[in-house]
Image 1: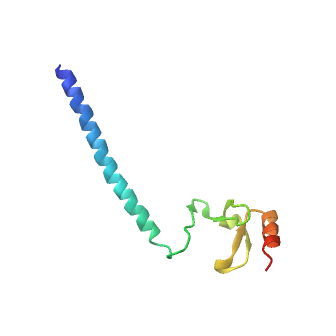
Image 2: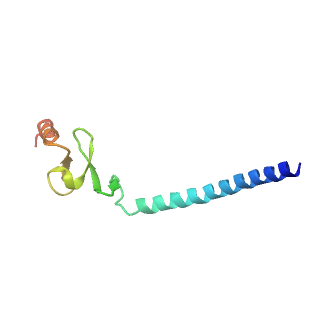
Image 3: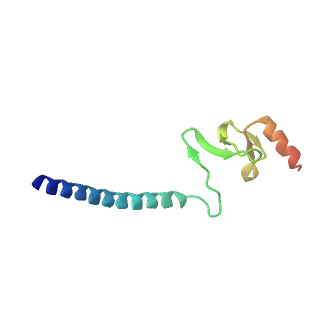
Length: 97
């Protein structure tokens, strides 16, 4: 009987510790995410960061590519990035300037 009582107390203590740790780490994680989001300009869409560099989205097919490997059309903030020459050509045909 003592063993069952001890086992029940150990299980309850483990559950309580687990809940407290989850509460602490979830709050810490939320504050870290909010801090990172505060570094960009208001209204600007977030750009995913990866080990290989910044990912950009192809406006024609929706594929994400590393910016350094993408084909660029335009300059500055108006630039569009493409995964292939075919997507760039199709986009230019659909959006004449």
